Each structure stands twice: as C-alpha cells, then as structure tokens.
Length: 178
Image (cartoon, rainbow, N blue to C red; front, side, top):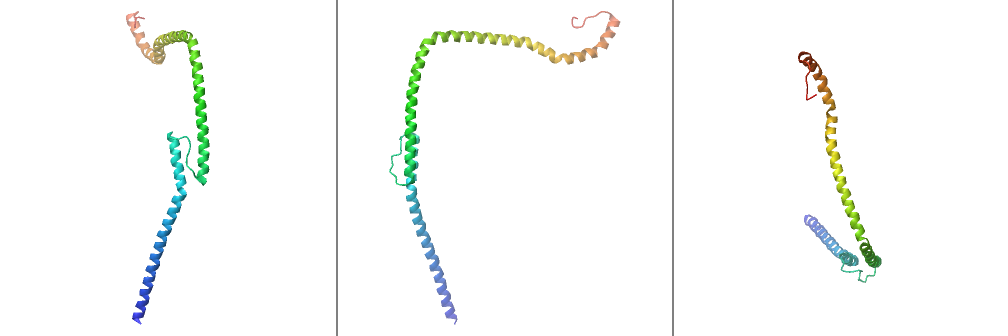
C-alpha cells in the first residue's frame, strides 16, 4: 500500500510539473505572438513618427509613406497641415520681400529728414540730461536740509538755554557766523 501511495504522489508530482511547464511554454508563445502583433500594429506609427521627425528637421515637406490604417489618416492630415504651413511661409516670404522693397524706397526718400530728427532728438536728450543733473545737484542740498530739519530744531531747542547764559555773561556773540 505504501508503494501505491508513493507511485500516486509521483504521478501527481510529474503532472504538476508537466502542467507548469506547459503553462510556461504557452505563456512564452503567447507573449511572443502578442509582441509580434503589437510590433506589426505599431510599425506604421513608428514610420509615422520617423516621418514627422524628418519634417521637423526640415528634411522633408510631407510624409511619403504608404499606410493603410489610422496612421494613414493621420499622415494625410499632417501632409495637409504641412502643405498649408509651407504655402503660408512662401506667401510670408513674398510679402516680406515686397515690404522690404517698399521700406527701402521710403527710407531713401526720408533719410535726410530722419538724420535731422535724430540730431534734434540727440540735442534734446543731451539738454534733458543736463537739466536733470542740474536739478539733482540743486535738490540734493535741499533734501538734506529737509531731512535734518527735525534734528536742527531739536539741537536749537537744547542749545537755546546755553546760548542765553552765554549771551548774559558775554554779551553779543556769533554762532556759525550768525
């Protein structure tokens, strides 16, 4: 009876190992298959991303890959946007050239007037700087006096009794030339 139980345990042990190995093999195979499917599904998006990178770098103006899925719709939309952007850029360059030509023509006609205005503006700026400096130099002593008025009042109030005593003892005297 003991060998019968051992044989049964051995059979169960091998069955468990067999089921576990089968499960691992099925998992590996299914993982590989899913990986291949995902790779195939994302390949068109990888190509799309690469083509967008070429547009971004300026190597291309449109996506030149043939796709037959959602990425194809996106690629066509990007191509339309890219075409519109490049067309607008060409129009902007043309308008910029026209504007530059007009500006050059106006600049030639107004050069002397501008030089006179610039000279006048320079003179006025220099005069403004001179007047500002003079005002600053005049205002500095006034500001210092205004800042010190309270201190001077306090000093004069504290010094008045002393000056009265000196005036009684010595008569007329001058303090600071006053």
